[in-house]
Image (cartoon, rainbow, N blue to C red; front, side, top):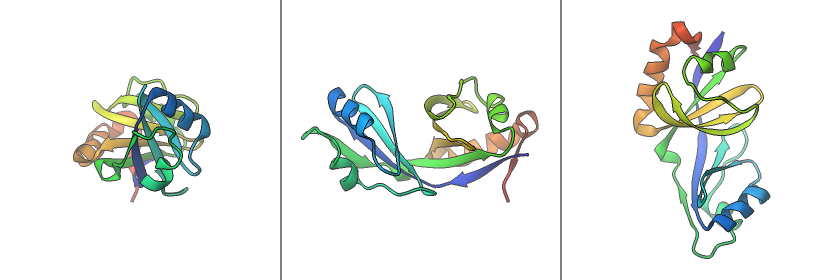
Amino acid sequence: MVELRPGRASVMNVLATPDACDGLLKAGVVGADVCRVAPDELLVIALHERAAVTVERVSANVDDPDALVLDVTDGWSAWVLEGPGARDAFTRLSELRLPDRGFEQGAVANMPVKILVGADHITVLVPSMLGEAFRERVDHDACRAGVGEAT
């Protein structure tokens, strides 16, 4: 059975020139995923199972003196879909086509989200104010999606 459980993530928002964003995407940040949101905006996401990131650590890797790096962790709730059939269950919650691994953004359960796809899990970042509503929607659609809540 597929389970939905709360996750933990550190999230940094990087606003910089497109060239600086390209550089950070290429260089990466150890222990985190660097995800392009717009030409001049990145999210640096570290799942707590790996490592936390800090504004200072991310800022040191951005080649733009006018860049703005903000810790926006409190603005996101993380939910993890895991177990055999997680990808299949996801298709019942969203029309998005997931990459094999990596980052995607769009709507899941009719809510705007950011998604990190790993080898054995799908982490969905939902705006914090919608976190509980997201869980309730997935729970409501559980029969259709084949998802059970982790206890």
